[in-house]
Length: 555
Image (tube, rainbow, N blue to C red; front, side, top):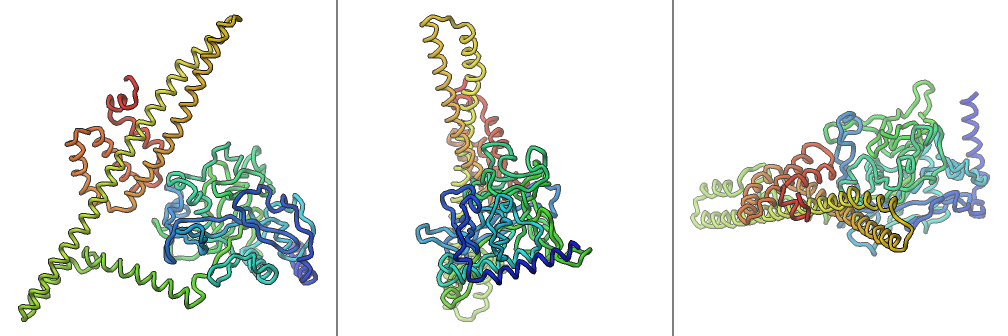
């Protein structure tokens, strides 16, 4: 009976779509709260059948050129479930550009999970939306979700072609997001600092996880799905990325094989957790596999807590002009990479000058041998200058890392000193004065002065906390960039001369900070996620009396 009703429901929906064709434009627009309960600057609103709408947000990243993309450190740095959600490198590149924001590309991701009202509208059911139909649309298969994206694209192209974004003659289309697109957005994208991006989940600064995600527990979801948009958004303005309904993605599920996707394409990748996920398991790396078909019924698999969130993509190559742009960028990239490999002898052929000398030795013509010898000297000079430039840049980064650590240490020690003064001296003294204060005007005046002094110290503490957050963010960025951009062997070779120079200048404490910085670089390169809090603690333990003196703290 249940299966027959399911078939009838879809048949009736299809019939309704046929009967309402050509009438959707006349439908009364939905109230905004039914499709955008939390309006915000930057919302991109697209029309839908039946007077409905769907809201998207830009997910931007820095890029310059058609072949530029951004590498995403996806997954969890922990090892507990590494074959499932362990750390791996993915790549993301949005298809859209904005002339007003050069050096940036973006893709569009739905601000909310697909709702039941939106699903019904795409199937031709133009009943007015209610709070109940603002629940996430669930119990639909991957094939259903893909078909809804097709229906929406066809409707936009036919009824609102100017609303669908495009670029250079190419028209966008509605689809499910890739896993990398989903995770880049869930982590906060370019809107957050490196340490925050690599954290377990996007920042939740204004309350517990239950303020941002419907998760397992009587104080949160209570085992029930909830209307979209009731909770607070993430840094990109997206709602319910974690919890509520889990979300289907475009591509098949793959295991993680030590930093790269395993070769077997499995079932379907589902992201974000749902109302059955415990709060301590909520995370941007959460992923699981859904078989495409239910072995018991032979029908496409569905789930009572599995829904979807649409993205808008763009074809990569649909014209000769676009192909020409991409080919030119490819040639520039290939030539630069090949030249650098030849210069550095990294193309598998060993020392390029030695190869030239071997070739020249076999030539009978003395003039030719002399010419090749001159060419060899030029190559050696270029190679030497290339390596020297790289080493100079690396030494500058090391010095900057030590200086960044110096700032973190100073900010942390100053904050600790003010916090101690407030918590251990000023506030206890103020409380004592309040208890002992008389009713006279002089006593009241003294108490008011003390309260103002404490308030001023609290404001200073807040300012120092903000300064520490900024300096820690810069320090983490320096650690991550050095670990990513330079091989460990090259870093090790340059560490000794940089340290010696610092000691020679009489800045032994900076040399110690350099050691801590390089330790953090090695730690991050070999382990996983950066830990700004732990690294700040390491830096504050470095330098002893010199550190205390720089912070103005008596030891």
